Length: 485
Image 1 (tube, rainbow, N blue to C red):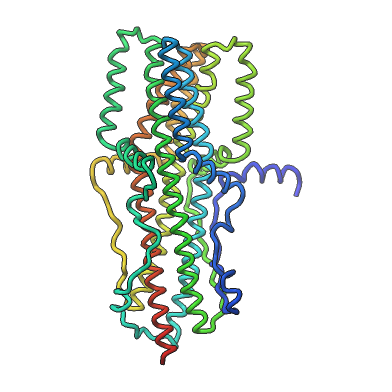
Image 2: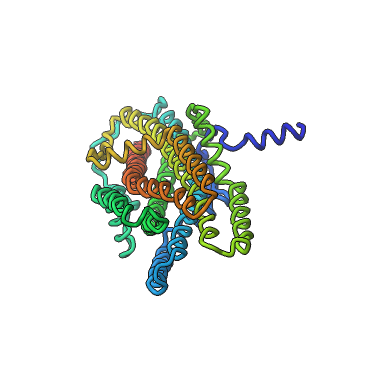
């Protein structure tokens, strides 16, 4: 392969469709001494990059990160009172918020992709093992003569916990749950837009000045910074719950497979399950390409180069307010695009995994039906209130490639306006103001959708765990009955 071909392959690699194809580790019938080594550990599939992103996300949602951010906000507020709230004081907060959102979106791009592939791999392995279990259940030697009512009444050792509500360890977790619910409420939407209209109302009084724009930018920046810290905590605890649930499901599934294989003396490998990628348009392909680049080392290098260039021109611009605005404008515009791209990727991958979970659930139901065993789990909880419907509708819109296209058009228009004003303070503020208002609104609206989606995912996995435990009880009772016979 020539240099041009290698270069083209490297350039076209980001955003390529990914096919998940794997089989569950086969629990071979071996000696007692090697049983422990046959249990699948999901951590074995995580690479260094995935562990780093998980660590960053966990730290971002910790109490230490929140307290540090709160201290910065308090110190910033005190400094503003002492200095008389100068322009640079407000610009500092806007820059800090824009940089924080920019970095968070960059990290979450990669982590979201890794999390989706990890879940799909997990689903493929469960389907693989489910295929083997159904094959053994359908063997000529197997008879469905176990009393299903007795199995259904057997107690289940559920060490995972409630899936609807995240477990709380301290006052900080309780506060995070409350803030997460409050931000996604209709009252929060009313307060947000009430503040926006009030700001517009005083525009003429303040002469539509730079100071007038700084007021709303600063207010939204504080809201984004403060709220995002609570959301990071909720996301961290959600990921910890999923991790614990996935591990428990795998252990129960491996134990069931082991018992069935030992009884039938079966060593046929678990089949390979392939999950093809969904069809994508050219626009979606472009979004995935951009997301992969941003969430890779290339995105980090570009960010470091931009920050180095910004620091390099500081002395030439005499460290002025215009210089301070440059980095905030850059991270604000790019972060605005990253936010739309991330939400697009998130909602599309969420729909993809939901489709695969539906296939897995259907396979579980077929197994229970064959065994004449009542399913121990009920339908998923649903909510049809106004805020949930609006949030779901906004999520549906953000999942369209057109939403990212509109974001690009807005950015181009703002850049043209700022260029026409020679990138003055007013021109840069015009770039920042509408993007921050839209970002703040999307955060308020979509948080409800994220909360419901995360809760739904936890319930799905918890139900899978309960079904695995009940199947394990059925398998143990059947094997012991055959041994007695």
